[in-house]
Amino acid sequence: MNDHKAFIEYLQIEKNASPYTVEYYQQDLKEFFSFLHQEGIQSLGDVDQQCVRLFLTTLYDHQLSRRSVSRKISSLRTFFRFLEREKLVETNPFMLVTLPKSPKPIPGFLYMEELEKLFEVNNVNDPLGQRNQALLETLYGTGMRVSECQNLKLRDVDFTIGTMLVRGKGNKERYVPFGSFAEKSLKTYIHDGRDQLLEKTGIHTDVIFLNSRGNPLTTRGIRTILKTMMEKAALTVNVHPHKLRHTFATHMLNEGADLRTVQELLGHENLSSTQIYTHVTKDHLRNIYLNSHPRAKSRD
Image 1 (cartoon, one colour):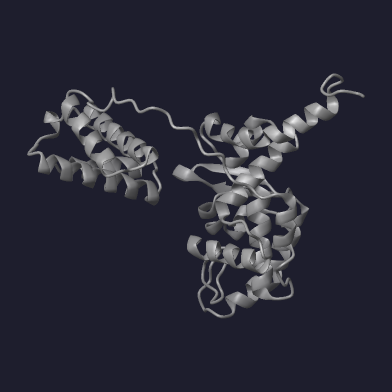
Image 2 (image 1 turned 90 degrees about the vertical axis):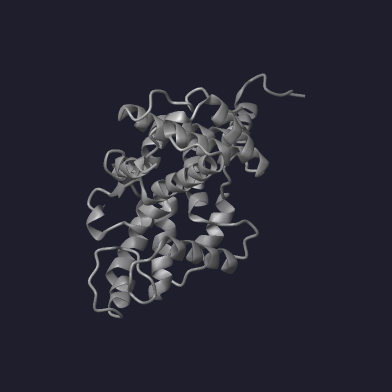
């Protein structure tokens, strides 16, 4: 069963899958091949509906979440679709597998009062404080993913028109605007604090966000910085990069932005990915209704 190597190349070259996605596919395939070995199935062409049902049973016996099971089934469905295309199997036994849809969790977000506390904790006269402020303003001001922020280069930021070139999943590019707060903090950091951090290393880099040693920040480093800011602000909620992305989308919708616009800004391929943010705006919509509709509430 060495066909998975060709499949991984297909993911990397044709599908432009991220390293994280490829890693998940490899984990799922390894687990499935282990199952086939235990069942004495030596050929992928021998995998049938009964085999798939037995595999599903083993996944549930391991008490995996519905989300984890769905991901594994999706990975294997894609794998067998590739095998079909390459005429290595006749049918895709995972095509007919259906799992009950589980309710999507409502994404957490920060209220403006909580955000204001975060914006006040950094010492903007210090190189790391300038970096942290610029990092916070960029994540909240654009809604980009942490990996996109980590890879942001100096040449990607155009201050003349206030936009950033963001490289998202599958190397897809999109332009995202940013406002005056992000502009101010970025300019301060780039022309002051960043230069001081660069002096600590002889290596030149175009990456915007650097660590205390002058090297490019990692995604883990960005999460650690946000956690430190959260502790300084004495917030009781957990703050991580994706929560800032959720907050960006929620606040945009609350202030009247349409779904299509938010979809484009977030870099979502499907509108359904953006629609999860409409759930967290229902209270806002109800308040507007109660305060605006002539017969929404009693006048006595």
